[in-house]
Length: 293
Image (cartoon, rainbow, N blue to C red; front, top):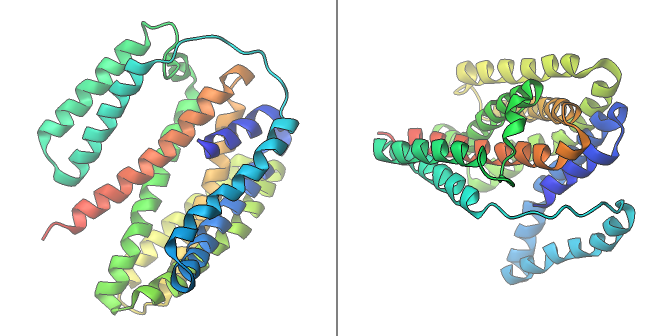
């Protein structure tokens, strides 16, 4: 929930001319946490005890009073929580994920039926779980769909790298994490901040072209030069995650700019939800393909 709330705060309270920099900075900090977190967690688990890892997330509670003080007071809108919509959408997602790993047609049928009933449901209820009016916002829908495809593709590729490095080059788990994955994760800090600045100065299309170029060239290079040397994959991962950082900043900026202030909460939450769902789907699809003999 917290990442979605952060995106909503940026969409509501940051001026449009500075949103690119804000999204880029947030993405950089998140990437730094994703890169440093496993390293710190590994040291704590190795030298102290794994149970102490559960205490670290409690540090974030300290930031809550500061956020409450900074946020503006808004009029509370009374409404009902759409429990039925949540259940229908959850069933559709769960069975679709089962289909991506088992390729059972029955799971796909249940998923499609659940989503169809869900769409019909949200058009009738007063307080739907997902606002059907967002579907009429063309820039928003294009941003969400493109973001889902890109995020899912990159997540699937990155999840496949450890298997490739272990099977093709016989690298150890420590080498894969520290030498192959870690430099790319940390490079996102730089790419994210630069991408945010470029979005505000040169426009989203310019940054999007750079990001897509990074991704395309990296995927093509990996497909042809995978077996040459294992360390070459480190460079590829750097540019893959760099391209993802650029495109993610652009998509967040475009989507937030296409929403009205009262739509920011639902719209940015839906974008965040789509991102996590597509990443999970990409990883599940790649895992299913790798399991095929």
